[in-house]
Image (tube, rainbow, N blue to C red):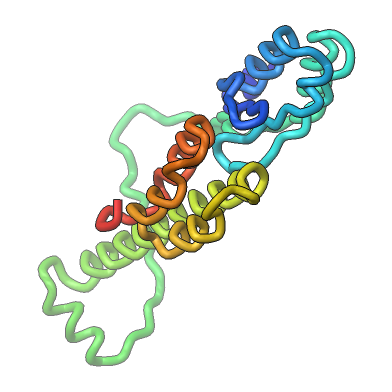
Length: 203
């Protein structure tokens, strides 16, 4: 079995109960050996990183199931690829690249007045912007993963719509309030998926 299969983590639900979690290889093997065909037909497996449902064909023996999974998921999320060139011994290059920046005179005056000068200030501003964008991206991905799972398994639950609104509003306390009386396994999985969906001030 490919190593990347072992890094593709997921969780299997039978109704409102978690029956297996871990790598897709582990989950598929566990449920295939433990459940009958009727239960397997009702099983829902979710990708822990995206909250999306994973379709697995459980026909045949366990080896047949795992072989099909390997064929279906040729390149799975989490595959580690090392594209970096071999590093040479010696002093590393700083990687500074020069380029043209067009600004108004008042912008140049402000940059030159900052500690370290224009170049240092511009690099700091770019780094800060990259961090801000990265943080927003993590929030959005966590929201989307939570939304995928909630829609698939909790769409008819009490206060589903209210909880979804608070997820996107970024109100952690109210979000938790609306899912508080949901089945424990589902509630805990939602909390795991939504862990990065809220800013520090609301978490």
